[in-house]
Amino acid sequence: MNQYNFKDLILQIQKAENQVLNWVERDKIRVLIENQEKTDIEKARQWFGRANTREKNVESKTILINKWKALIDRWHTSAESSISNPDQILGMMGGSGFKGEGGRVQKYGVLIIDAEKEIEKLENELADVSGEIQSVIDKLSDGNYRAILEQRFLKGATWAEVANVLRYSDNDDGRYMRRLGNKALLEASVFIPKTVPHKDLVLKSQ
Image 1 (cartoon, helix red, strand yellow):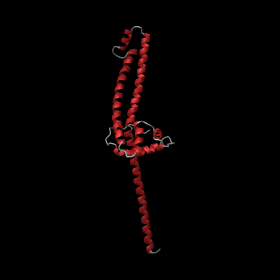
Image 2 (cartoon, helix red, strand yellow):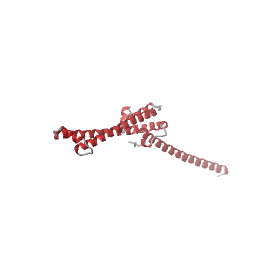
Image 3 (cartoon, helix red, strand yellow):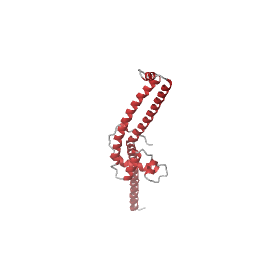
Image 4 (cartoon, helix red, strand yellow):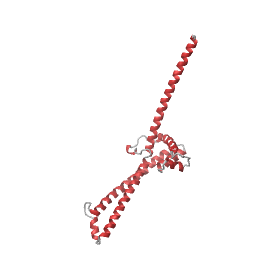
């Protein structure tokens, strides 16, 4: 091998080494970008999920209130059927402390009042949060992304239901729509306010 060929070989080796290093660096950058995108998507999912969280809390408390009211009605009916003197019924319902059927009616009456106040608070928060979410959705340029996020996070649809409503052909139980939803969340993440109360970030991905 003459001197010229030897130098040319060295240059080729160096070029190949640089190319390999570039590939490694590009791969590192790609991984960093993918990890950051996953983080941004998860934060956006939690932020958008605040409305669903409050709505579910309202639903659960409403169910509980209806259960307590049914118990109270049953106790009223039981007392009225077993006591002939109306004054006796009034006596059961009054007085201090929670004693017997009347005491339980008082107890659950107080719980109902407290739960109704909590529901009113949650409904007010839900209206505020829904407005915040809608304002971010409105900033998206892609109409499909806007529709996906509205269906999922303001109307509480599952990913499969979103696909059905928007007439997407999704035969894999919403997995394709979930991937599309992640792209929408990633685009929306740049419009989400940076300061969000920690208590709001409670919804896990479903």
